[in-house]
Every structure is written in structure tokens, then in C-alpha cells.
Amino acid sequence: MTRSQLRRVAIAFALVLGAANVYFYNYAAFLALNHPDSDIRFNLYGDPQIEGDAKLKREPTTGKYDLLVNDYYLQHIYASTIAAFRPQYVVTMGDMFSSQRTNKEEYYKRIDRFKWISHQVDANMAPISGSHAYLYLAGNHDIGYGGETRAYQVNRYTNNFGPLNHDWMVDFHNASQSSNGLHQFAIINAMHLDKTRDEQFRNATWQFLQQLATQRSQHPEIPLALFLHIPLNKPAGICTTHPKTNYTDGFVKYQDYLSPATSAYILHCLAPTLVFNGHDHDGCLSAHKIRRTASHPVALGDSGNTLQISDDLCRMNFTEIDTYQAEVEAFGEATLSAVAGSDLTSTADNLVAEVTVRSAMGAYGGVTGIFDISRDDSSAGSHMRALGRGFTLRTEHGYRYQYREVRLGDHLIIRILLVANILGAIAVPAALLF
Image (cartoon, rainbow, N blue to C red; front, side, top):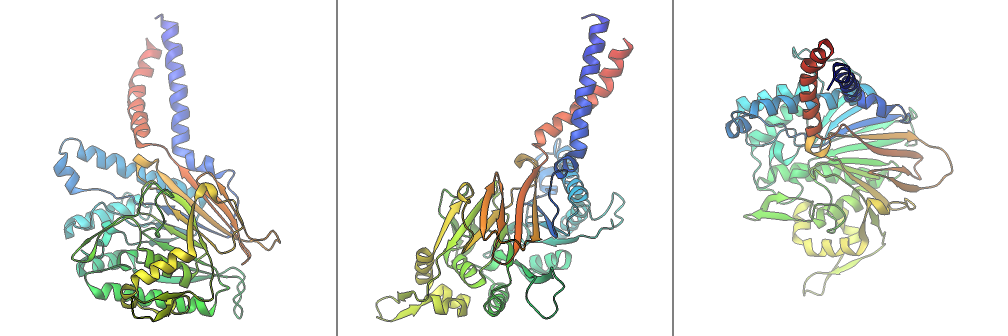
């Protein structure tokens, strides 16, 4: 290769590398250029699962490098998408850490790392100002499944991330006397909805759930968006994950979906418009069709008695739902059906959209979910339309919803870019001076 050819190759390499770097550092800004405005925006980050001391013990040579690269990768995702999309809410969908069993010292090390990763503090641990609120869902790698949760896990979680269950109202029209223009949001602790060894945790979660159900019965005209870590139950084939729950001593040891009975209670008694969750790293878009029925009698064993599930379900506590689990599941099977995201072009009447947010981890493309809500007073009617791995939804409540995925790219590509930058910094000047 001649000197002039070598210089041309070096210049071409530098231009391509420069373009790759420009996109990497500004990808969110580019993708936000054609994003519509909205009244409220949520940035959703699925299961970052940052690792720590256990990885260093398993991989003493490469572990420190991997942790460093992964931290910078995730921090770039949070910081870039927050700056580009300017959300009102930044929500991490659970599993902030990779293990619920870390000791106290390691736990607080990861707290500090996570604050930097999620763009709450700078490299000197000084707070970063912003107008957005940070919200969190409790995942199995944060407090454990129901069969293993201990009080210290719940206490340290709530001390650092806030309550396990809470709800809030947003007033789109500043209406003080009317429910018109109100929208409700709720975070539910999915880890203790089904059979839990320490009953105090399950009791607290179901008390919140029943209070929410009472509110919903009094004001069904106010739309509700739910956030909970574990997805609702659905048949195999809708998402990549299949329904699976393992038990130890009758308590949940592992769970891909909530139980059919709990899912039926949430869909019928809370009547949400949308449900967002994490847990399944592949992500999924689906919907639940609800067939309303005035009466659905279910036989109680061989007693000859019947239970009017449609009338009584929302007044049940978790003990009663456990007792009549088979009957509640039968009611759910008769009144609920799920469809995959590719089938979501339909009217939105009695339809609940469910989004499982794909993981922000590099192996899954570094995804951020962008969820927008706007008032829509048009007469277009209720309608839902799938858009790739997202959707648009208009409802009778007068709102327009939109969800889309914003991806950075596989972490291997980022590692290649890092190596290319190092080589380019050495090789390109040498080739130009040759």
C-alpha cells in the first residue's frame, strides 16, 4: 500500500469512526427529533440489574472491566434519554440490582453506583438538579419473591427507594371540583400479591389493592395506569415467557407471571387502562380483552352452593381468593382473553394494554421505554393501533397514549467502538504522519 493510499484509508476510517461516535453520544437526541409533544411523559427503564462483588469473585480478571463498562453504558442511556426526552417521571421497573441477598456494605455501594447510573448525582456524588421525579418498582432481585422476603430487605428498600405501594393523581385541567381531566397512577408491590411466607407483607399489599379497588368503583370514569414488576398472567405464546410458578412450602419461590386469580382481580376490580411491568427481559406488548358480565355463578365444590364472582370478587381479601382460587380462575377464563401486540389494531373498548418494558441491559439493546399521555378531545372514538414494539391508544376518557422503544444498541457494538477509538487514536495519526 502506498503512502497516499494509507492516508486515504486512515481518513476514511477516521470519518466512519467519527460518525459512529457522533451517533453514540447523541443517539437519543436524534431519535427525539420526530417524537411528538405530550402533556406528561414517562421514561421507563427495565431491570438494569447492576452487578458487584459476586461478579468480581467469579471473574477476578475481567470482572472489574465489565462492571466499569456496564456502569458507563447504563449511565449513558439514562443521562441521554432524560436530556433528550425531558420526562416528568423517570421509572426503573424493578431489579435495580442483580441480587436480593447482598450484604449491607455491598448494598450501599450499589446504591451509590445506581444513583450515578440513573443520573441523580454526578461523578462527585453531587445531586443533579432536574424537574423530573424518580420512581421505582420492587423486583425479585430487590426484595425477593414472596417465599423468601425478609424484613431487612423490605426496610432497606423502602428507606432508599420509597414505599412499595402508592398512588397519585394528575390533574390535566386543574379541575378542583370535577373528575374531568383527572388521571390516576399506581405502583403496586407485585412480589407479595401471591402466596407470601411473611403474611404481613401480603396483607399490606392487598390492603392497598382493596383500597384502590374501592376508589375505582366510586370513580370508574378516571383512567388508571398501573406499574408493577411482574407481568399479568396470559397464555403461552403471547410473549416469549411462558406461565411458570415454583413454590417452596406453598410459597412463591419463582414466578414469571402473577397467578390467574390475582390477574383476574386486578383486571376486573381495578379496571386499568394500561399496565406496565418489567421482569421479562425480552419485553412484550399485549392486551387483555374483558367481557363484562352482570352475573357469573360458580359452583362451590359439591356443596350445591354458588358464588356470584362478578358481584363478590372485588370484595374478597386474599385469604378468600386463595380459598376460592379455582372458582376465581374459572371466572377469569370465562371473562378474560389476551392478544399479542401484533393483533392490537382494534377498538379499545374493554381493552387493557400491557407493556412489559424490555431490559435496559446491553444484551437486550439498551432500551428505554417512552410513554406519553396527552389530552385528546377529538371525536375519533376509542381505538388502539400497534406500532412496531409500541402502540398508540385513544380512549373514551379523552386521552391519547403512545409508547415506543428507544434503543442504543447491543453492548458488544459499544465495546467494539471503544476498542476502535483506542486503535484510531494511535493508528490514524501515525498513518497521516507516515
